[in-house]
Amino acid sequence: MASVLIALGGNVGDVRATFGKAIAHICGMTQGVLIARSSDYATPPWGDEDQAPFINACVEIETSLDPHALLFVLQKVEQKFGRTRNKERQWGPRTLDLDLIAYDDVSLQKPDLTLPHPRLFERAFVLVPLAEIAPDRVISGIRVRDGLASVSTQGIERLPDTG
Image (tube, rainbow, N blue to C red):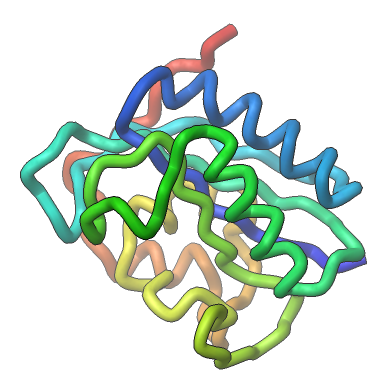
């Protein structure tokens, strides 16, 4: 079983409800086990700033799927919740964005998948929830909490639990 970190994001529809359903689908479709789930965070848009704020979270799962099979599942789950990657603007509004952040200690550079995620340590919206569930995880030689300390978290706020 591999320990996998996945980032979730979205800013269209009831994102928090979508997260709950998407996590259940991910675990079911990967025959994976949910190890940890962060709180949800309201975050300013990144890249394309002319849009609604996002909600972001992270999960850790264990799965026996290989990285490419897992990526395929994540993209299927995105589609199930209305995401069409080929018809949206880069960094634009979306119902659900699932990013494979890290897969054990695998380092991979393929046209469709780079592991660990190449922009992880530029993105506070991923590092804040990730540090909540895996502060001591070392990715690309950097401890998550140390990576978080090197970026601005301005505008990011933890949302209250949904109950």
